[in-house]
Image 1 (cartoon, rainbow, N blue to C red):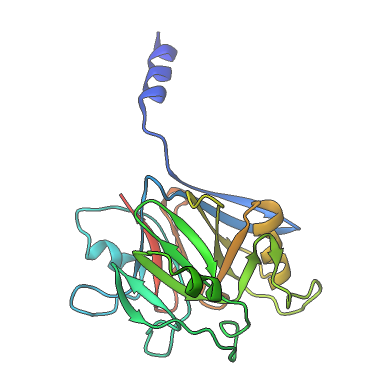
Image 2: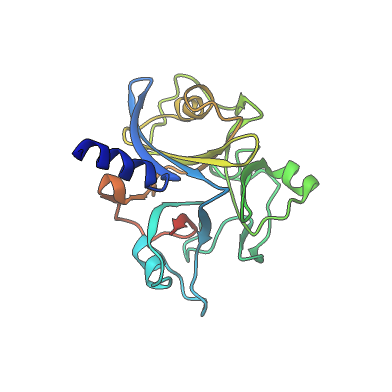
Length: 238
C-alpha cells in the first residue's frame, strides 16, 4: 500500500515549470534552467519601487516578501553605475532606449538582440527586427551579441577562438512558450556557447547576456552565485 500512496502523491503533485540541471556539451559543463513562460511569473528586475538598485538575487526576494524566488540570472550588460546598456523595460516602463548602431565590446557586435517578456511568452528578437515588429513586451532587456539568429550562428563567431569565459545567455522556443537559460561552468568561446543553444538545445534564437559577471541562482541545485553587483536580472517568482 505504501507504494500506492507514493504514486498517488506523485500524480497529485503540481508539475515543476522551472527546472535546472547540469549538462555536458562539446566537453564543457553547463547549467541549464528551463522556464515555462506560459505558466510561470518570469520577470526582469533592476530597481525597487523607489528607484534604488537591487544589485543581487537576495534583494529580489526582499522587495517581494510574499513570493519565493525559484530561479534568477543576470540579464544584460550595464554601465559603471549599473544602469542598463541599451533597451531596458520593466513593468511596461522604459528605463533606457534601444541601441541599433554598432559599437565597442560584445554589446556592439551586431547583430545584438532583445529578450521580450509578456505575461505568457518569452521571445528573443534581433534588435532591428524588434524595432520593426514593435512587440508589446511588458519587460525587455537588450544585450549582445545574438548567439543564434533564426537557426544560424552569429556570423562573427570563430570556431577555434581563444577568447574563453564563463558565459551566460537565454534562448527561446519558436512559439514563445519556453525560455531556456544557460550558464557555462567551464570557460568557453562564443562559437561553442552559440552551438549549445542551436545544436544541443535546438532553439531558433538565443541571446548573450555576459561573460565576466555571469551569475546564477538555482535553489533546487543548491546554487547561489555571489560576486559583482548586478544590473538587470531575470527571475521567476512563485
